[in-house]
Image (cartoon, rainbow over all chains, first blue to last red; front, side, top):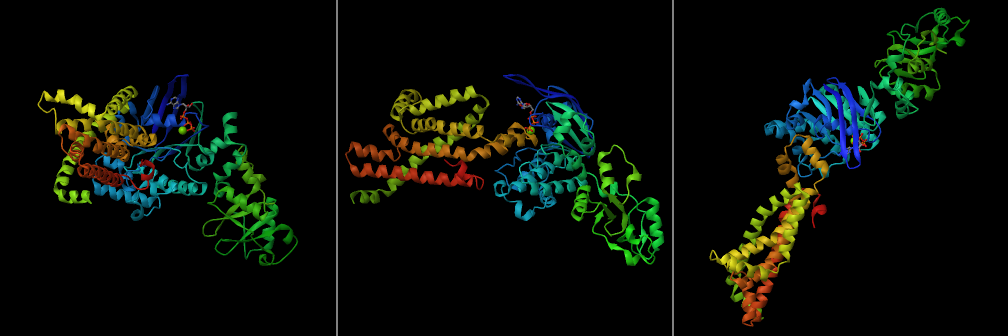
Length: 378
Length: 220
Ligand SMILES: Nc1ncnc2c1ncn2[C@@H]1O[C@H](COP(=O)(O)OP(=O)(O)OP(=O)(O)O)[C@@H](O)[C@H]1O
Ligand SMILES: [Mg+2]
């Protein structure tokens, strides 16, 4: 856990005092990722570097796991806080192995133990240890160096990690890959992470909580969805962009919005029963399930109105389905691709789990009201 | 032909004089590294100190070597060492300070600030930062200074023959006084060859001490 109380930094410059960080209060709970976001010069890096004492603070307190950092020797403090600098900062005179082992070596670990750890960490970020351990930083690509920069910070297994734009210097495709790797890693490691970013999408994707700064002031500190749904002032709203509502699509999953799991007909069921259910709810369509409960097809009300017979004859293939685990962005994209206004939802095994509609999605996004009665299959 | 014969006849003498020469330059530059590198590191802490130290070192280099030897004769006579090996070593030591101090200073001040920040941020103390990061990164540039010092002082040491320090300069000084071109040319060639060999040898060491793929940036 990282807690800041009235944290302030005033730089004394020839042009007068510059308040880079102004009376910031915030707390990052243990095991969570907090991302500092804001325009250039708003004080993100300064905030981060005050935590490990690279920049001395002007006023306020910082607690790590409840301990006032002023009471800890700064060198000891830094060895217990992983740090990834913006420019990666691998030492060109050391092999990758020695770079990763910098902190374990400072802490006096046995060589055998730290070298084994270096190999494990390389594997964790999909770099083959035998190929990379003995190489020098200059012999790696930017993305590979960035991965090494991150695992170097993790080498001595510190509970807290500070990262300054750790995925900044790489192309968007590789960045997405490293972000995913990192999130997977974090699921296991559960570090308390404070991380500076310029990239709103990165923040939304990776953060448990986002802290938005402006001119050294912490403007809002909320979970990403909350931030996008309820920016507290105009600056934040415009910083997040006009498309902030659409950004929320990638935060919500199909499972969050789907409903009507009980609303279905059995493939061998009665046509009249299907018509009855649809009329009762005012729906135009209903999903037909197989014997085990897998989503198989659907019926359209107009096709069967006044007809008699078996469901088999009238059912149509589902144009597409949505997995409950995928995000709404993917589901909406599927809807537009197939020009439909609803999708049947299934789990990994194809079992019917309900449905989502465009209307349900827009209600979830506007998050102002949710009227289940409006959620009809049209 | 004369000269070649002279060289062949005097091979062992050339060897002995070369050894004297190398021992003057080697000992002096060795001591210069031991003093110049720490001075170069120390002055990175203060711009004023750096200006003063580099200024003095530059002035020393402008003193003609003959004048410097002349100056040392009365001073060192006090301990009975006015001529010979000691003044030669001291002169070379003094001349070597500038390239070594300056290159150390430049190399350390030019260490990428990101390296320094990473080292500090990972929990290195100031000394650890110097020993593990800044000095290793500075070594190739310091080695360039050492090469300059060695090559320059192989020439200067030739003049030290005039104060009885021995070395390859003896061939030259005798060649002049005895108007014997064979000795003169032998000495000149030997000094040149020694300078070239020493330069290549040190270049080889420098490359060994440079991490891969960065030599082209640091060299020269
Ligand atoms: N050493 C310093 N001396 C004086 N002013 C400084 C110093 N470091 C930072 N500042 C000022 O403090 C403010 C905050 O800087 P900081 O580096 O924290 O910004 P940032 O949010 O990290 O910006 P960026 O996104 O561009 O990295 C800026 O106005 C900057 O000019
Ligand atoms: Mg910054």
